[in-house]
Amino acid sequence: MLALLSCAGPPSESPSVGQARAVLHRAQGSGAADRTGQLWLRCSPEDAGVWVDGISRGSCQQLAGRGLTLEAVGGGMHRVDVKKDGFWPYVTYYDPDGVKAALTIRLRPLGQSEGEAR
Figure 1 (cartoon, rainbow, N blue to C red):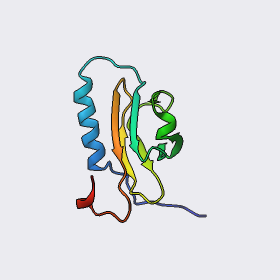
Figure 2 (figure 1 turned 90 degrees about the horizontal axis):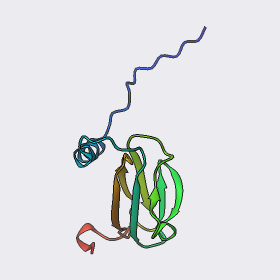
Figure 3 (figure 1 turned 180 degrees about the vertical axis):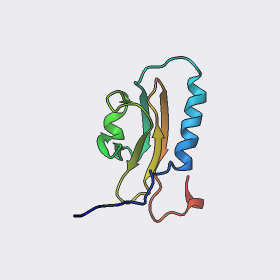
Figure 4 (figure 1 turned 45 degrees about the horizontal axis):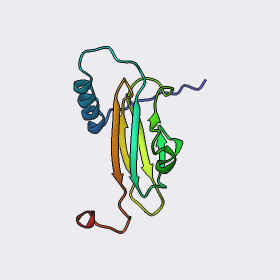
């Protein structure tokens, strides 16, 4: 007879996810919102790829002008990654609960120090 036991508890939420959730909660107020949302991204470089919860949604350039509609991804917080080879990735979290947001993202080349970022 083989039994598997685990001592690990549920994964803990990172402080940045908790802070993002609190900001969104305050921004939404107490009104009932739907479970859809719209996220517009302006990126440099424009051909950086966009992933939501690990699934590719195209490049920033492809999404320009129409935004990223997040209605079929389900409720709760979702991870949004913007990345391109040779650049540091950008990661944020977004809850599409009736929220419309626009982000301007400037990826930093891998060899560039933080003080050189413009």
